[in-house]
Length: 471
Length: 126
Image (tube, rainbow over all chains, first blue to last red; front, side):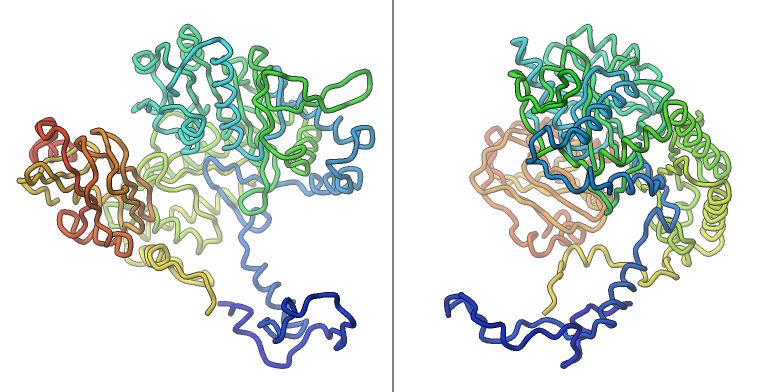
């Protein structure tokens, strides 16, 4: 394992020689240093090697398969970065007057229109910095909408299988959470009906849901909700299954957020930042965050003239570099290309599910969408946990899928459209080998990984005796 | 699974042991096993008034973070400060040194609404 840089220090090693006499410095005596700072001492080459070695320990989509469920770790085409690096986008400042930055304003306005088309919505805000902030923005709009109608509604319904951020966002917006159980894997209208009432402000749904299943009762759900004046919120985390094929707006959703860093191929998982644009139907448009981009003639401007807006949720324009990347991706593929992306993502997930079903029982026998949830029941009988399987996968050069969520002891596998059949087959063969090892030598799996720079971490001790300071 | 006879249980996996009008509360053996190794416990403030069923503490393991609910209404009169430095007590001795807080009960008859060891055993065997 690479030593930390302080432990590599050798007295006298230097990378840069500073002038001994820094000349007259206008600093009061009490603020002047009397002893040299305790920095590590290394040569330039030692520094370069240290950080290069560290960088080689990184795990990323550019180096490895990363089938993390509900995270859409797809390849991020390099052309996206090239476009975001163009000086007209990268060498501007958000405080420049609008007439000097017409290019980026036009791009953002076009991106809003693209997202409206993709989602079947009527207006978008690009401000929110990521999915969870998009959810909070959506919930604040739900609140503003009901208040504008003089209605006091206190509850938000969230399925038990929802992303954890859903109830958190609704709670942060001041709502009480009502959990909807869906034992069959999808929301049943009859169950939902029992919870609906004039005190419910919204229902938050992910479609396809976290089990990788399409909520096929969605139109009935929307009808029941709207009858009671309840708004329908779409968590776009799983949008990679639907691009160009089905639109949340057509299903009856009133508000959606997208994760550009998932479905639209911008870096995330440590490479971020993200972007969580929020789209709405016409009746919710007055509440979108301000300022908004407005067009008069050929000119784009910012406008604050939206008196019912919930206000600003993010500084300046949002995470602009990410918006440029997502726009590039959408324009490079077009609607037909996006459709093929979702088809391939769905075929890949079903391929893995079918190939692995004898070793890992699928949560649902139904075909899945862009991700599949497999259970590790057989392995658990041998004393091998889903965590052990995840650790063992590292030895094969694969990032673990999402584990133990949304159901106990499961693997949630989202291969995405960008992997080749060869990679999928390698993953399948690794999973089958782990199933075999679990039957024949469970102890071996329980102590994985073996080929990583470090062995199994003691997560409990790390959490109980947190120590991150070099003494 | 250890489910002592002399305690009452909430559906949300807390146990309660009454002593006069004060009661001690913790989480069950089943709960600690499901949570796995507890790494952090957030206790309520002494003097907090809680209604039965209200969230009043948080327990975190490497696997999950869960709310702990007051099984009965009343006022928190004592908390087990040792859990702050030794959260593992919840795993090692859930019904003893791993207790969470003591509550001065507002309506001790609420205890009757809680589960007996038998009905709690039935709940977790499902």
